[in-house]
Length: 541
Image (cartoon, rainbow, N blue to C red):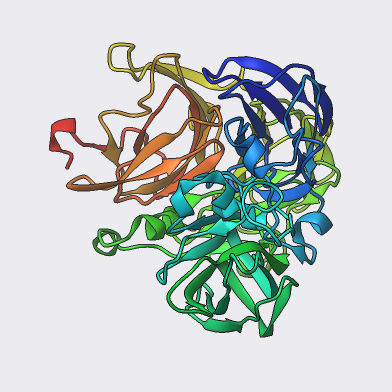
């Protein structure tokens, strides 16, 4: 885990790393300063970025988030002393499963910021009274319950003025299970009126109407059945008086839990017809071909594609030794009963055990394991720097021996040029010129600094498919991966340590915001690497 404090020009002022961070930043904050937090394969953070704010759990699906110190609005919506002075204690750690997925007020986030969507829960609305900070949407999820006044802290609230077309949202960033909501209406009577009815709409379109009284106490809405939703949408605000007057929401509490995504099961992806793919939305395109969250602690994340029946897996042992199992999806006694596999370690040092023989896997080391090997397990050497085993597996009809392939033993093929922005070195691991396999091929391509195209001109190969894993990318960088038929191309945005499936009919090339590396894995009818149909760039559409 890494914490950085940056100034408005992104100059680094302070940095701290560790499994848990509990530190003091000894300097005064200036306008534009921000706290940037990132962690490999961590999505729920327990944070307290200032002693004046509550400790809470936030969800960051990208594994990182930025909090800009709200220097311009501090006195209006934060407790006195927040982020002030020259000593700032900051605590950040990965949330435990109980903290992340246990029953709690899942809408609490005192660190929510106006317009920010990288850290959840996040509140937003269609109107804010006069655009004033004391009426921002985030005020209603910060945990402050004072509601017998209006204005600055502690009487800040969300207010949209005297309107009858208000919309208010709480976005959790992923699916949650909700059983109860508690509303604290602003009760600065007689200045205020109140809403006697509000419709609560869930992601599936179901609406529950909440009925309120003009009181300061919290008012509960208990659902008849727990609801699965990503967003709570408040609409149809009906005031108790007419003509319309001032009403506001001091706090909304949503009680339930975040739903833990089960990444241990084999995910099955079907083959796709190129004629159908032309009609896919961006979301659908990603569902079919994009593979995210490959590496999660002490877990084997596995995607089985019906495209040449390739299996793509991310294996990240930390505290536990992980064993590769066949699962019912393979209908096999063991994983490699009818398969072969390759693996490249993109993390810290680890150990792979194959039928009792241990293979030490340093960063960038590879290994081929042939059909018929039964007991395969993965373990960590240093929990501070765990391994990340990237696995590709495909059907096999012949057994070949286990081969350890250090990156120094991989065949290196320089190609491309600086002028064409694609100067790179192809490291061939599982390849006919390095070792023998049944049909799997695998390697690592590394781009030089200043180059960002991985393959151009691009190509297809109808006799085999391919999967790319992009890596060695900074948190704020991405690759625009091109796919589709040459006359109707599409793209998928890929971030660090994410993979993409390329059917045999699809081009596969990408351009990054800076240089990067990628692991390619191929399987299909042959291993002839010159069996390609190149597409002239001028012919792409």
